[in-house]
Length: 274
Image (cartoon, rainbow, N blue to C red; front, side):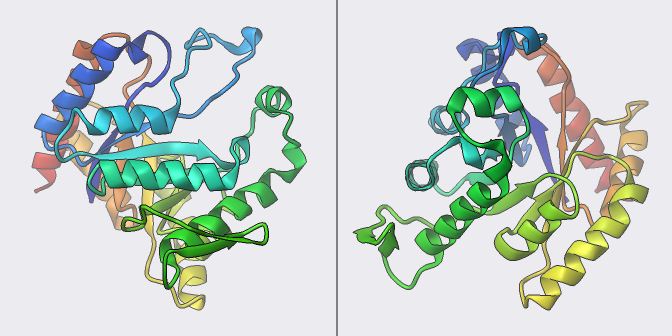
C-alpha cells in the first residue's frame, strides 16, 4: 500500500509559504504522494471554506515539483470537461517531464452546475467530454511514435515522457467502466471497506475482461485516530479489500503546523503496518 495526503490548494491553506512547508514536510517524511483539488469558478453563495480561492491544479503541481525531491504529485481530480483536451495533454506532459516522472493524473467528470455555466460548457456532455480527453491522452502517451492526429491534423506530441498513471475519480458504475477502459486505477471517496469490496471486485472483473492489468484503487478518506495501531488496523482492512493507495485528508487546516500533524499521524500508521 502507498500513502498519500490531500494538500489544500484552496483558501488560506493555499498561501505559498503554507504550501511549501506542507509539501516539504511530507517529502521529508517519505509520504508517497500529494494530491490537489480542482475548481475554477466557485459562486459567491458556495464559497464557505475556500472563499472562492482555488489554485490551478497542474500549475500548482509544476511549482511544487521544483521544490520537492521524490514525492509524487497528483490531481485529485482534474475535471476533464473544464479544459480543452489537447492543451490539457500538453500541460500534463510538461509537468510529467519537468517533475522527473512524478505526476499522478486523477481525472473526473465534475458536478458543480455553476462552474459548467461559467465556462459555457454543457454539463450534460461531461461524460463524453471526459472520454475525449482520456482517448487523446492514450493516443499521445501510448502511440507507436510521437505523431498524433487530432481534428484531422497530424502533429508532433513532444515532449512525450513516460505516461503518468491515470486514476478515474467518481462512483460506480460509470467511473468503474472508465477506470477499466482508460485508467491505471480508480479513485473513490470512501473509507468503508464493506462498501468498497464489491465495487473493487467488479472493477477487477471488468478490467480482466478487457485484458488489462489489475487496477490500483486510491481512496480518499480520513484516518480514524486513536493511535498508530488503530490507524494501521483501519488501513489493513482497506488493503484486504483491494485498496492500494490511501489519500488521507487533513480537514480545513490553514497553517502548515496542522497539516504536519497529519503527516506524522500517517507516517506512524505506515510504520505500524510494517
